[in-house]
Length: 319
Ligand code: MEV
Image 1 (cartoon, rainbow, N blue to C red):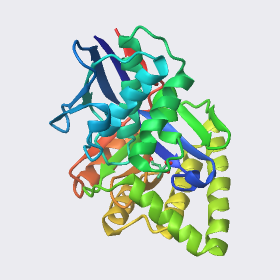
Image 2: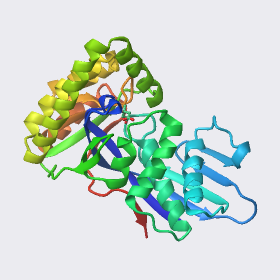
Image 3: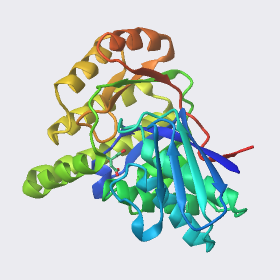
């Protein structure tokens, strides 16, 4: 039996625009998805069980049910088995602290931890690049055309600037003066569907949308500098501008706006949608000492509020 875990994430700036090759910035959170892999005896199959979803399913190649919410997890394990070249029957058990469909990278973290646990159970050591690449293949199954930022941050941890065509660079940052507060809108949504809608809007109005995408790219570069310089006020301001750009591409709604404005009015340095929008979570950046005040204000209108730290650690094999 082998265990692995991977962190959830927050996109600080640049979601959606990153799908069209603009830079974006993500940070790993101290919430983790834990996955246990165990080789079984008997015929080839992958048994997947998720504690959080209270679901179990057995997958066997052609007979595998693609509609099952557990299918991407099976697919991550299968990709790993095929890559390694060993077709062993397997059990995968998931226990995750990361809420699903909430913009916190749950599916990517589970995929990354599944790849790592599967390889470890088979006694194979994969590089981090290999883990991230295999998890990306499972992300394609879930989201259609992901940028790759979610599996990258879940694998490598810390804070990164990411660009689809170039990969990522690590940001040298000390997040200790600030807190990240996430508040759930209570509206679930599909990342794949939101990405499709935003791309359709871009294709319909290219002359309006192209400059907006370029602005988002410049914003991400500026935000990366602010993070490395520890200029949190500037980062907050840029997050607010980024939220405006995300509203412009129609991924906000009334509930999200209420959360964003409540956070700003309670003293957040900046607040915005994080992830695909349309629901999910907002993220607020606050001074550490203001974290509780902002969290309390958000608790009045959100059922789930998380006060998070940035986690330096990416995927890890658990001892
Ligand atoms: C999802 O966490 C972020 C999006 O930009 C999609 C992607 O990058 O694949 C909305």
